[in-house]
Image (spheres, rainbow, N blue to C red):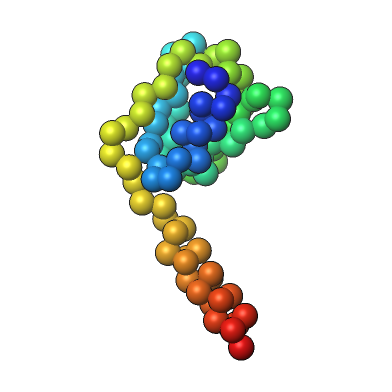
Length: 93
């Protein structure tokens, strides 16, 4: 999978969770886009909250990516909408 394809998956609206399968047999679940960060050198970091682990890996290590057919709601969407509404209200004053 190309860097841009993975970036598109990560930034998709709505977001579809996906699983990255690496050549060494590990699987990385990406339930939210924030769990995967992308770097200019085409490397990635996978963040797991429970273990507080950051795993860096290269695109060449990706064997395949499985994408869920069911989108998930953005947990921050409501908060962003609230902040936007507050800003618009302040701008009108």
